Image (cartoon, rainbow over all chains, first blue to last red; front, top):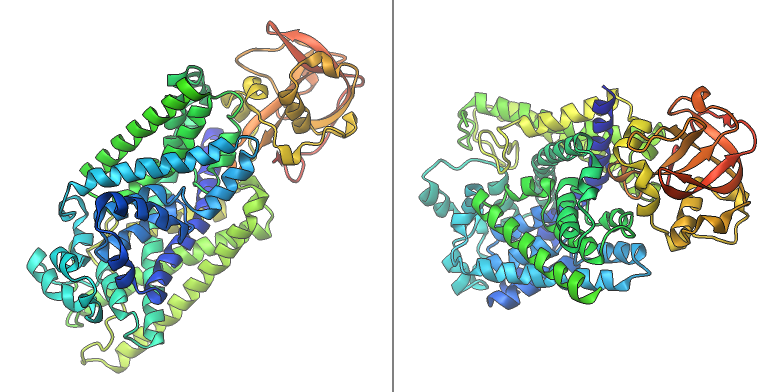
Length: 341
Length: 279
């Protein structure tokens, strides 16, 4: 009973801590549609995979959201037809490459500025590499969830003449596409809604757009909130059931410490805006490389995030993302452990 | 995946279902807003998250309630429209555009909102728990001294020794771990009693602990210093809150030289502080 109550407290504390950032992400993702001409933003994204992944990673600077908040934005960018490398770069690096996270990391590791610098560099490198790897998949649709594919503009059109499509409402573009692609009757669900929200930019009167914004906020809050609840419940259960010493006990050698901190990052699902403070409490016992591994890997992939990512990508793609991110983080931070510190 | 929603109002059933799901959404979001506001008003936010992030939770709570109210207005308006336009095609596709049978999320329709609502209701009913010795043991209180790290902005070594809190002592120790350095300094600290399970202390000793929160309860970690009592520790059960006065000595406990508080008088039992955590 005691343990159950402890688990519930941890569970609620994760939710109370994450909810503001989720709301911020959902609101920002909706506002982005109302006030930013995404057609232009999407068109401005480089088609070159390396450049695209890099630029996508840096877009996080415009949207200071953590990993609970960046999925709705990434999902919507994909629906707008943003190239896959850009979206992947954004998904992986945006939670780290943003002013709030940099600020909190600097506060926490003021006496070790290299942690902040390396955190940024490693996140950019890993996101760019993975973005490039995924650019080999020319057509992103097979690795995305069907609901997103249905809301996407036709890929070829965007590739050929992204700017020319701008003055044409997206809903019209995708109308025939919807029926042809899935053969199902069109339903008013969140994706269609978002497509019409996108189409409404600058077209419909403000009250209608605000109505759509409200509807979009409610739908995304509900859908992503449900996943967040589930992820936090799992994270809390593991924290209570597995003794922390077990995880910490692994943390002595250069290799095991990295593995342990990456495991912890995955389990604890802590928000990237605040994870630096958490890592700080391990700073004297753990190698710098392993702290970096925690700070680089955690925002990219954790229990909670996997749930959110599954709302964008097919399970197979999430597994590849996970494996690549883990491997690259491990190699880079091991290099730090063995050759730098 | 059952009901088909054709986008027109030919199926009154689907429409009613959509309204029902919308109401569930409103309830879930509003309940979460109320939960956050309740934590704020009742002062129990500090059991969950670091005070630096209170404002985030408060703003979010108010925002969620506002979103819930706006959505309710939208729904009422939609129902009115529907009633007055009965038999005509619905004019606006916006209302009620709830997903029936088709979701981005991994859940069947309604589950996500129901999960959120259930969590919020549980949160409203169950008071968050203050972590105690059981959690301290589980999280490894005996090793805590070595995993704590000084936070330079909070570090003031010029303080009088007897004004340092338990956490400040542990942070000092982290910077300068030699226990002899502190021998003879006066101590007056508060904390709760822990009897470590992995390295039991002799009868006359107990471990005085505090939890430190860096972000939220999920990362609360215990810190502590051993206390040498003037008599047996049996009159101080685990989780009792104490104020200990004494001076610093060095003891060898469990084969390790450790900074220890030698109580000069029997510790005073105190009520659990309003804010049991340190930051």
